[in-house]
Image (cartoon, rainbow, N blue to C red; front, top):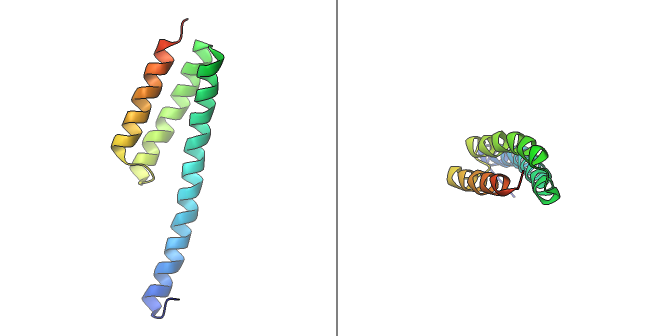
Length: 88
């Protein structure tokens, strides 16, 4: 257990940030899951709409430090390629 005042504060801050980051991560996963489902359905219009919603979430996650920026870029690139590959 933390002994000093600053260590106790650091524990509280860490708990707060962890909760916020969990919410952000969950939100990103939800958007990506919806996109995966749209891709699986084979409907290009739905997939493109889901991609337009998921891309900013992934990049925001990178900006906020939940994901590394290269990881987010890689995911966006691969998802975009999968959406593009759907037959119209």
